[in-house]
Image (cartoon, rainbow, N blue to C red; front, side, top):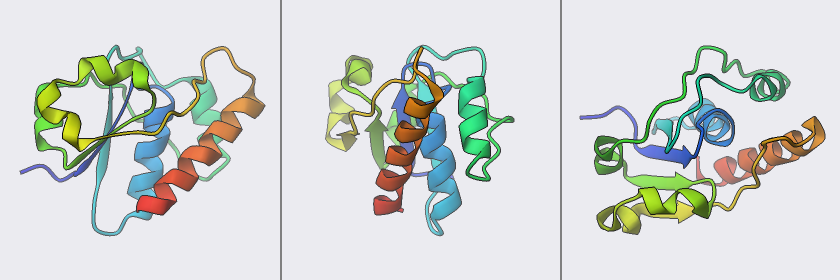
Length: 128
């Protein structure tokens, strides 16, 4: 049995899905989350570390993880950050999927990243 129930997915697992995982695990009292990427980056993006530090959440020790079928099998809900990663999810798991359509952070200014972070936090607060 897994100790998490929510799976957040994006491409690199170094920004948006990591933020969602961190916010969810900070806010939820009864459930846990994990995040993964379809093509994980080597590490958490420095901008993600900076803007999460601003919220009092340290994500430095987090590592991008590869999305696996086992993760999808054991998740009660799979939340994708955008439709780009939907093709990596087998049809048998699509009934668990919710698409948040969160803007990408790549090559965007920090002000944009903060707006995305705040949007993710708001969505997580609504579910946690």
